[in-house]
Structures are given as structure tokens and as C-alpha cells.
Image (cartoon, rainbow, N blue to C red; front, side):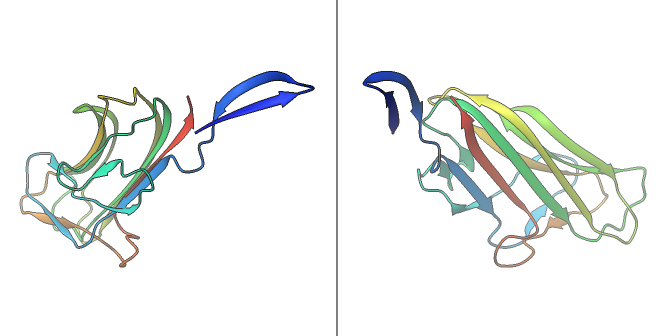
Length: 161
């Protein structure tokens, strides 16, 4: 939706009203992350007024071009592995990582990873997805947390065109 501003009858700017151009996802249950490979996180939409989150492909594909603020939080369950292995989470644009957050495994504790970065999306073919990697010797869950998705989540919102 465009917003045209006028002062004394002169058009001064055409801008996009960005208040509803966002999406937020969460887990609907814990998700098992097998060891040794990136696994796409299976978010469900939490808030998605434009229907930009696809729950079949697990992709965020906005139809408005611009710069998006992208945030991601992943909570790995209690790890029983040594610090010689690591866990990570990635935000990917068109399958290529543009944000990675990683940490060595801590024996006996869960791990929370969070990050925020800006990404340009073209409004047609560009998409985002999110992955989790488990370097431990056994499969581990990423946690839903509460029903509100307090453990593992993402949010993306249009900053400017």
C-alpha cells in the first residue's frame, strides 16, 4: 500500500506503509536434529499477515522488495557431548548462509543461540529458510519452549524499500 504525502498541493514522497510487512514463526513441538548435517527448521507461522511463510517448504518469501531485519533464536536441549563438537544455526537466503551462530557443546547444559542481521530480498524469487546443525554424537532436539514459541523462533520485518 503506498502512502502519498502532500504539502501545499505538492507531492513530496511516495512510501510504503510497512506496518503489516512482517512474519514470525515458532515451533509447534520440539524438533529432532540428527547429527552431522544441516536440518531445515520446521517453523509454523505465528504472525503472518501477508502469508509469506510457507509451512510446506519452510520458507519466508516476501512479495515486497526491500531490506528486512531478520532475527533467529534456537534452543538446543541438554547436550551430553564434549566441547570438541559444536552446534549451530543459520539463516539462509536462497539456500546460502548469510548468518551463522555457533557454539561448542557444553556437557550437561542446553544451548541458546540468537542473532540478527539485515538481508535484501527482491520481492519475487528470494526466500529465507533456517537450519540447525548438531555436531554431537547423538540426535538432539531443538526446543519449542512454551506454546508461544519461546524456545526456537524467527522474525523478519521490512525495514525499507
